[in-house]
Image (tube, rainbow, N blue to C red; front, side):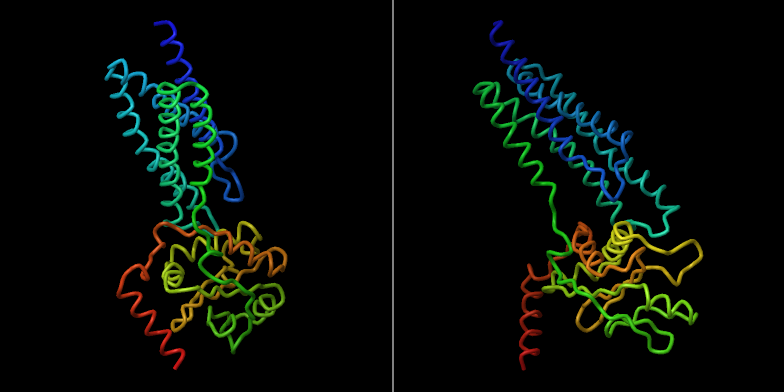
Length: 308
């Protein structure tokens, strides 16, 4: 009996440690400045620890037929649904003072990520605990290494660089209209502002690889996310009440190519391109018309027309 209790204890400790480690590895505070450090870290690591300890208790509790512990696990999972609302509300408050906001779609994506990562922590802790109980603690350690690695891999989604070719564009004016290549962006009436834009501004064009990429770039929320991340990474000279320096994104209606203008702190076109490539594809924008027969038929017809 004592040996079995020792095995349960080892399983719980291994599951807890693996869950907390997985949450720590999935926690990032980068150029997006969210979660904040150290307070945001404390909140999310604490929630991850709660998820890990409850999930690691589940397997020993099932074996001992202690169904009350399973009830607590279910209640905990339900409470994690509130995390999405908490993150959404926090980011929306921050949005009110942002010069270049993230946009509602970006915020909803971040909120979903924080909720789902707690479920992933629970899964890691549960499986590691199960391996340790059913086999031995060495198997639990091996499962912990594999599952934490899988958790880190699951963090990576698609980026704009995966769905579109990004290259430098030429900024120019036709009268007071600002263009990047052949895409009209906005009207700039002040001659001195036009001179500054041509001197210090950067224009890029995003050419989708296929109709799936074109559908992503059609999303206003995705465009706002691109402008926000580029501005965070490369800086922006925009100030309150100076709309001439606002970053702008417009598309070519025929081709779906997206033209972008930004006014970074330092004119470095390659840095702007690199920043655009690493913008995540938002869940709300990830449409795939080519997965449907109608979308594939239209894409094939378009290609035939271009060849002809």
